[in-house]
Image 1 (cartoon, rainbow, N blue to C red):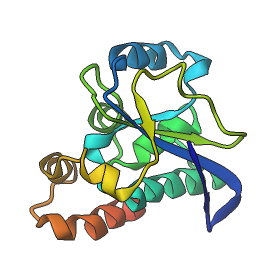
Image 2: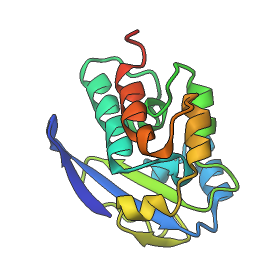
Image 3: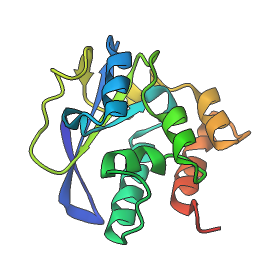
Image 4: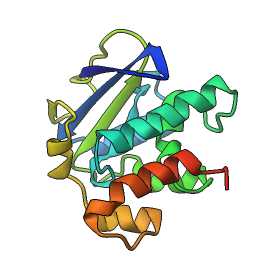
Length: 170
């Protein structure tokens, strides 16, 4: 996994990766529902993520909410998935953006600590999280549906980042 430092949270390492051809999505989902501590990661269906900027906007939002004691979920990793949502419904956010039994490509995020081992948790091919890699996974129609947008593909990025930043403020 690759380490990223956000400008607003320089002391908090953010580890990201993309796992392609996931073979155990149902097991991951079951472990998350059971609260298995080994799965302290944000697992996001890659088909719902347009770019690194899209994902990191949600990470930044979650870290900022934590900083201001405004988190609404159990931990920072579920808060990242929730931050992707344009509305305040936690269950809907987890359903739309989180790992599903049928997920084939998975964005994995870990906040804090040293480089986390993902190989034993996720069956698939781990690769760097790049915009090019995400472009091969994303379904723009799913992004439009999740954010209730009718924009062209090229216009989705700024609109989605704005929706993440402004949720709850309007």
